Length: 151
Image (cartoon, rainbow, N blue to C red):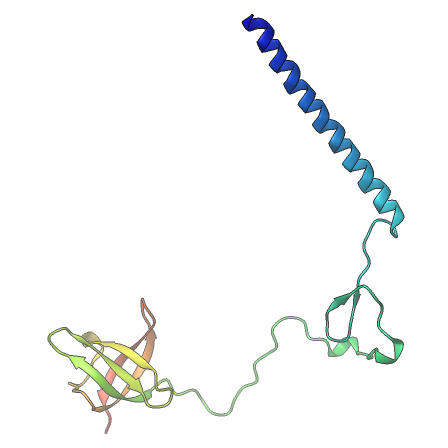
């Protein structure tokens, strides 16, 4: 009796496989007929004056003539600015704890707080001192280094 049940389940599995094959074949044929109905099987899209894709062509009066030489590919070249970037920034010590060995400096231009470690100090600083510093990329963001009292 166990053999007949096993063969029954095999037959059922084979029927399911055959049904899947037939469905797959039907879908394949439907795609073929669908692609023949449209123009060559490739959907056609237009681009409007704002760069959006549409299924309708734009009006000839709305078309804008563009010169191919005006199109810039890649990254545009930076123009040399006459003023050099000054890496030395000015700020005010918002907090500093010598026992812990770190603090924060508030940038006077951007009002951002930057971390400063005791190893980045040139002069001894205290809270509310005006200082000059440079920024360097640290593990968690920009760190103030080469910190000295403003003269």
